[in-house]
Image (cartoon, rainbow, N blue to C red; front, side):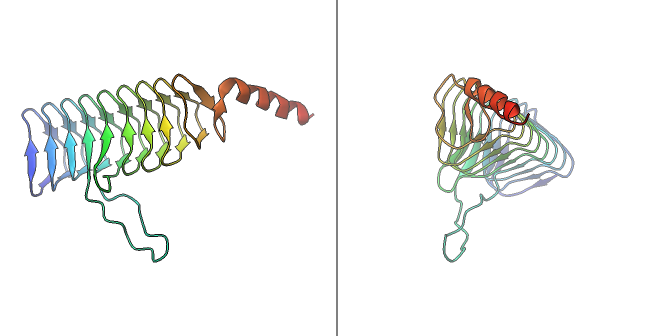
Amino acid sequence: VTIKNNVKIADKCIIGENCVIGPNVIIGKNTHILPNTTISNSIIGETCLIQSGAVIGDRGFGFTSNEKIEIRHIGNVILGDNVQIGSNTTIDRATLDSTIIEDNVRIDNLVQVAHNVLIGSNTIIAAQCGIAGSTKIGKNCKIGGQVGITGHIKIGDNVLIAAKSGVTKNISANSTIAGFPAIDIKLWKKNIIKQYRNLK
């Protein structure tokens, strides 16, 4: 394990082989970090599980439009308590403030969370999802595998998103959506039936 500058690790944490921790990291008690994980510029809550190969707190993907100059990222990542992060998932630090994963969130393997994103408490995200920068996801949401979510939108509380959907606009609370672009799942099912009929 490599521990860099300005790192604080609370009691009863377990850190696996080949992890790199820091700089600028705080890890809450009873957190378990599996091997080959990299964490920098982050505050990790208590009783979290971070699985192998995760990268938390690295620089986000941002360039100026003309000269392709990298935009500095001086923010951090904040994980709440009892958060689980899957293998090879990446969570980018914010440009100025914080990328925030609230309490009790579950994120599966191979998920990309971009800079400045907020994921509300108790939300579950399945594998291979991509969440673009500055998007806000509410509490108690369930997001199926391989969903793509564009940047700078808001998704309300208690939203269900079917697998392989593409979310391109704000979504109201308590919605269930599917397809690309993602729409109300009842309308999506009607459209799918029409498409199959047209194939005959």
